[in-house]
Image (cartoon, rainbow, N blue to C red; front, side, top):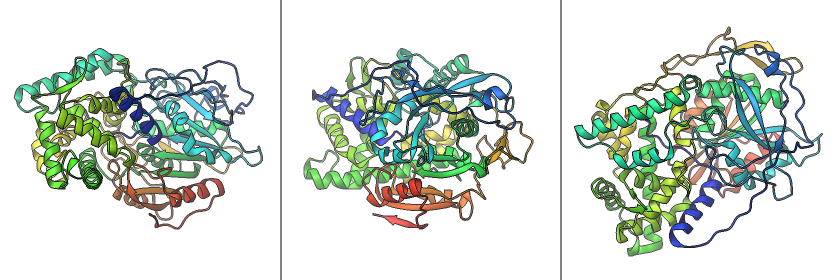
Length: 572
């Protein structure tokens, strides 16, 4: 299954990481949560107008917003979100969408929603601002309350809204194996295979995993493409009562936002795409670019570690030697995993995952130093294992969210198939050149989604020329009678949004997961005059609310006042 790496929102990641450190080191943390309830709120969504191609039961549905319950295990678990700092309650609802957008009168599924209403008066409210926090596989219902502090100023103009995309969390979430089996599978191989016997074991584990996905969600799997979710997103816009979609997408959320803009260019409102995915790459290239991105972040951490710790930096001061230390450490874990948590040990794959988590944000670098010091010098793998658990959505009770299964199901619905094991040797040298530390492991991402039970259908459905009554935005043609965007040899949408309003793109020069060049290529793909690019010079995955006043002010001015920054703006 694909080995590319997901995004998690910075606020959620940092808070959870501190908890993981506390559990291993014995420190204490506290938190507050609200009560889950079921009483209706006093602010409802007006019944939507007709939506061409959809039955009235879907087009005119009205959302009932209730107090939010505790997040489910599949979403990430924990306490109910309760209230914001000003006493505003979090509200939850569900949107009903077609399972198959080519059969809009057939079976439906529910999409879990959450919102915090705007602080603006009715006449000053702009609309709803819909968030997708990436992955694919991140639960917006779980993430938005954890990240709300970062977006509080935006609530002066918008209701803040997020959702679990189809296949994620409480939106028909895909769960392929149970928790205990998932733990055992992570220990049985421990890392990429080294010989024919281990290749056979990997194939058996993959086959078992795919069989579990088919048994649990076989009829759902073909309908988990980004194109399908983009259509859900446009129906959400319609039901929320907005003529155009105001949107904030991070990491994979930028791919989703660009897909929506390409399918529905007339329906684009004020849209921000932060940590932009490269729309021109195939899955092999994505893995290669990520290998280079994580290597760059690792070397930047090593320079920081050497400056802060001197001779006590666990990998030394030289980037080449430090990369070799990391590579040797990961290789040695194949034969000698470190003690971890109870019967679970720190394997190569889990150590790689734990390291990569801490490279997403410069604020997490001190925890990487601590974890590697414990592992390399004390033979203690607990902290890296805790970080891997955090990345994999495993809680302290050993329960997993469905983010990994959703990531696989969505990625493999978009790009079924793969190059298989035979391609690993073909690409090994390229991956090692891109990342001396991680390349020998990340090259296995080229195997892709071999055996995944979803056919390649092309980029799918179409946009029509009909006008929605009472709006200036073009409506979709769910029946598929219009002109389709071009296919790319898989099930992804071909990006191109000529005629759309300006879309704000933000790329960070040191982003490990979505390298900066992807933002430039997205600007080109969207079409002349659509993409407006801001460059943040710095480290980490994402730019907004990451310490740059320049970025934050440009985004806030754009979303709240419609002020479009100069294309090419550079923020230090």
